[in-house]
Length: 264
Image 1 (spheres, rainbow, N blue to C red):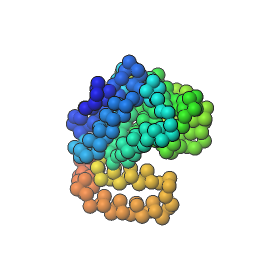
Image 2: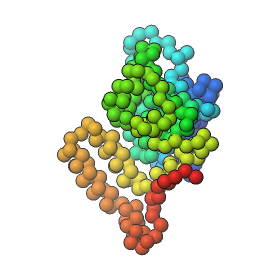
Image 3: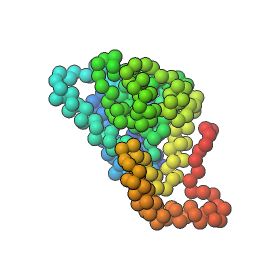
Image 4: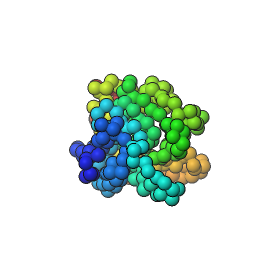
C-alpha cells in the first residue's frame, strides 16, 4: 500500500491494525509514510466492515516524530503546504466514528506523541516515553496536538509539556490522563487488540453519535450539547442494536456490549 512498506495495514475480523514500519529510524514519519497513512485512513473511513482501529509501531518504539533528515523546507508557503497535506487525514482520524486505540512502546516523540493523541485510548508499556520537543528545534506542535493535547490533559499541563519540551514517562502520562492503561511489553499488542474488539462490540450508531458530540463539547454551549443529545438519543432509540440490548437485559441474557475490564 505504500512505497517500501513504511506502513503495514492489516484488516481482520473488523479490526484495522496500522503499523508504522520504519523501525530502524524509530518509525520516524517521512513522506511515503504520511502518504500511506492518508490512504489507509481514507480506506478505513469508507469501509464499514471495519469496526475499530489499532495504531502501533514496528520494533521497540511507537514513533520518534517527523524525520528531521527529510525536513528541507525553505519558505513559509512550502512549510504550510507540507502541514496542510497532513491535516486532511488527521481530521478524518480524530473524527472517525469508530474506536481508535494506540499501543505505545518506547518513544512517542513530537508528531509521534501527536499521532497517539488522535486515538480514543492510549495503552502504553512501562518503558514508553512521551515528549513534545518542538521548542527544542524552534517549531510549533503539529499533527493536531494543539487541538488534542489541551483536551486530553488540560490547558495548564499542555503548556507545561509544550513549553518545557520535557519527557514524560508512562506513569506520569497515565496520571495526567494521556495514557489510559499501562501493561507489560509482552502484553501490549494483545491488550490493545482486546480493547479495540471490546469497543467494536458497542452500537456503531451510538458510538458514532457520542464520539462526534464529545469532539464538539469543548467548543459548544449547553443548549447546543443538549440538542445534540436529544437528536442523537432519538436516533439511537430506533436502532436494532438498542432493541436487542433491551431484550437481552430483560431476558437476563449475555449483553451485546462487554467492556474488557482487565488485561489477560
